Figure 1 (tube, rainbow, N blue to C red):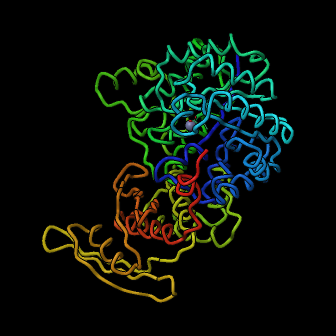
Figure 2: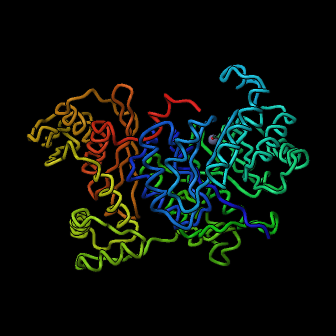
Length: 517
Ligand code: KIV
Ligand code: ZN
């Protein structure tokens, strides 16, 4: 049985998703969860493209042990040196270099000849290997390239010392059978390929990213690059949870598995979705809320007789089992802290812990039983608010119902320290609240997305609100959780505004868009 390396690129390619930028604290939190999940490699960022990415790679290299930390570099000595500077404190560094190989990219984007690409590959990989023993080389847009040229470039990379060669379907263009052919061709025609790790990296533009990645494994690839929830550039990357559970469930077919602790998948999915402001659709494979729900009478009948009639995986195997009741309104600080620890959450900052505890007490007063999902939502809400609170919601009053016009009064603490109160009418309570807040804040802002969901069943559930706001050319997400969904909506909006107002807090894609590989 082969063990496939899981190279997670949620924090690099995943963060390139439009509007999916993360703060450094959020990146660290996701990084820690990826480590608990047991991925082989965490690609932590693209240091040469933004100071925020540089810092995130550096912090992750310092803190996360027992896992390979990768950072992406463009070609040429200068970019490699800068990338290495961010990565050098990692216990197991992997320097990832990339050059395009398709004639399309060569002509239209890079203005280079094939000979230039061969020379740059040799120079970049040789130089990288002088700095670090583990170097990956990616042939960008490989699936739209001449296979003979891809094999030639990969051969040069291997000869120059690459320890991993990656064959990406950069634009999600290939079909599984075609991809199998390309990987098979490279396996036969790249000198020395049997001595290195062969990796695949597929995008989901035509919905084939997971299938293509698995086709690569069938032809001998031993590393898959993927992201939690399949987040990423355009339609995203291959989704980690789909690949991991396909290999685990169909070991008989692939004769391969991964080292992933699958019970940590659901939590990784929730954290990523929350921080990136990208809700998971209910029917999403493995992590969607309906992925293990059986509604038709026929299916329910089968399930009651034998789960295997309609289930190929168990919800508990991916950490998606029924949420357990863990705490109540009489639970104290100690019980709350212990429970957080058992979930792998440790607040280093006592003030932050106290804020989370206060929120827990407030929720527990209104909601009899607190489940682990509630605790998670409370913590997410706190972590989101750990961003500098230039604006803080101090009071909210709403009037709405079947008669009259919905009205909201809000009081906000503003960046200059003063407290401002205003009121507005709206076509619903949330509209009225957002209008009242917008009257106070000192920037033009448009709400482009709003999603609300219940954390658990029943009417006393915590409601989670995720929003996206745009001001000028900046986009930010916001998150809020509360048993009162209008309050949660207000917190989400204020959180989004704080992110827009804190220029330096957003790292990644906004800045990266201006940079090129
Ligand atoms: O999609 C792609 O080709 C990439 C490379 C940097 C591997 O993300
Ligand atoms: Zn990619």
